[in-house]
Amino acid sequence: MHEMSLCESILDILKDQAAKDQFTQVKRVAVDIGPLSCVEPEALQFGFDVVMKGSLAEGAVLDIARPPAEALCLNCFKTVPVKARFDSCPECGSDALQVVSGEELKIRELEVV
Image 1: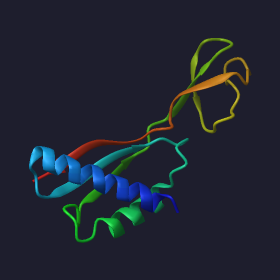
Image 2: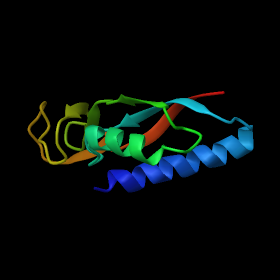
Image 3: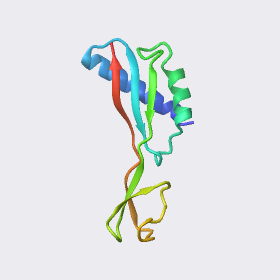
Image 4: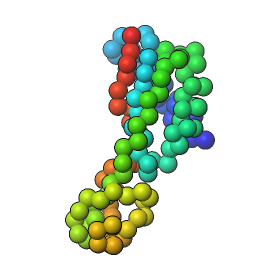
């Protein structure tokens, strides 16, 4: 489960940001997880709760948003929604799609004390 190592990386980011901005407690971490990121939100939630124990983010809420995935069709040049990496263009049927969003895993917002 690579979500545990992702949670450890989130904790490292929180520690670095706490040292920079001088906060002592994290109340909420808002993240965006794209549907093409290969991250399971439930596993990330479980890992977050485990990894944050005893840290400045113990008891913090993990707020997960799932922004939609989109791709640019290199045939009809439209940006279209996709559900999977190798979907065809719903407009023209082409398989020549370039993903433009949906692969992200990023911290969007922190609520700190």
